[in-house]
Structures are given as C-alpha cells and as structure tokens.
Length: 193
Image 1 (cartoon, helix red, strand yellow):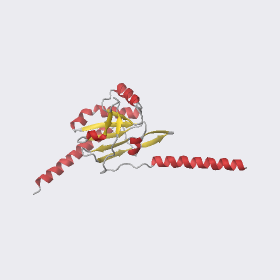
Image 2: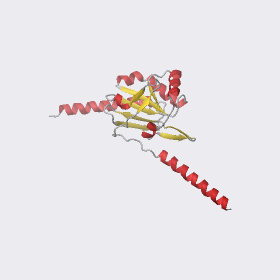
Image 3: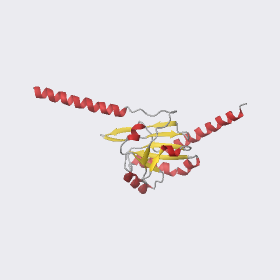
C-alpha cells in the first residue's frame, strides 16, 4: 500500500511538472505591434549568417512555419516565391524561419525552387523569442505566425495562426496600405505651415 501511494505521488508530480512546462511553453509572449523587433542572427540555407539588423531600411516579412517540405509550408513558401518580384518592388524582403536545419532548408529550396532566405533555428531561440514555439505531438515546432517589420525596425503588423494559401497576397496588401498611409502622412506634414 505504501509503494502504491508513493508511485501515485510520483506520477502526479511528473504530470504536474510536465503540464507546467507545457503551459510555460505555450505562454511565451508575442512581440506587440509598435515594439522594436527582437534582433537575431541565424544561418540561411546557404550557410551564411543572416541578421535582422542588416535589413534596416527595408520592410521585412518575418514568417515562422512548422516544417520544411510539408504541404501547408510548401504552399506558403511557393506563394512567397511566386510574389518575390512584387516584394522587391515595395522594398521588402521575405525571411522564413523554422526549427529545421540548414541541410533541410537546402533540400527544401532545391526541391521547390525557393530563392529567398530560409533561416535555421534548431535551438528554437528565435522562434521562442517571437512567441512562436509550438508543440505538435511532443515535438517542438514553429507556429505559423508572421511579423511585418518596417524599415525602422518596428513591428507594424502581425498575423497569428496564418492560412498559408493566401498569406503572401495579404502581406503584400498590408505593406502597400502602410506605405500609402505613410506617404499621405508625409504629404500632410509637408503642407503644414
């Protein structure tokens, strides 16, 4: 009887600790609109280190996705690739981040003809920094979240739980709308006495 009681207490302790870790992991803060985007440096599929700071002066589409070469992630990446000339036209770069390795990113890019930067975060530090670390059947993966960062390095829009099928178009529309609003605000400022 004593052994059963000790086993039950031990089991409950393990369950409580496990749930506490899961709750902690799920409650990571997501950076907010208006906040300076957390900086980072990660390796790309080419093996070169890419820093968020090197894109100051450009719009940055920082998107997190669960796994290379899966259906939703492939649709999302191919749509971004399809629209790359449109992103270039609005002075924007696209950076994809997952917890996959550089080698996995290389295979994904080769297989699907992707030429924008995919960044490897196998240590899950940047994914967690952006409140985008999720749990899928016991595996830690990136949640499908996107952050739009303006040329000054501030987060100006975010999408949480993205639908990959039309996400590229909605990000482009948001950039154009924000650029239009900024231009109109600058014109108003120029006409004031």
